[in-house]
Length: 287
Image (cartoon, rainbow, N blue to C red; front, side, top):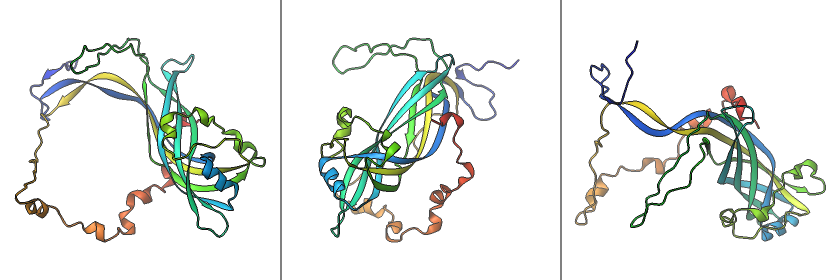
């Protein structure tokens, strides 16, 4: 029977492991990845932007970025250990609006996308209490936290694929993704310079975005890990000298890459993104 490993020094280890250490960390219990094409997302514009769209001949999308992602974790009824993760993505979309022969005008709007995934997050019955340190005050006790797993969403800024103007009366089912913008969080609204126009508009903008995301369920646990040695920095700190600043400048390498744009073969990681051989998402990640 193998000897149980406990925290402390390890003797006779052939792989230089010095001791076993108990750490407190977040363990991933389940995860999934997704590659999605988000078609016909409604873009909510400010008042000035909406006036431009009402008189525009065409529109082009020039970029999109993630400004916030909200998550809500709930247990799946009659399926112990599994949880639904409701995710809402908030995008800041930049559009180029063309009106006649005039130069295009740039406007920014808000797009929202919801998805739901089911992941395994195990079960926890303990009640968690923690104290919160405050300088020169009593340390207050935080409220008890439920022992639900923590959802973590990793996402990169989406790929802006297309944009089009649609007449509200003709868009049909594309108008189903309506949101009450008046209830948007203040920090979301502060990302835009103008006040949102009424969502009941005759003409709306629909965009298509390409989104890559990873969703994980984590729990705070104690793990026993092998330790080889203390992690001692090997590099010496480099300071500046007010007497001779040129010494610091001499240690800076010439920025060759700034003068010569990279070649096609330098973008190996980007080219790999078009490989469709492994683009199937975990079945749990379908909404």
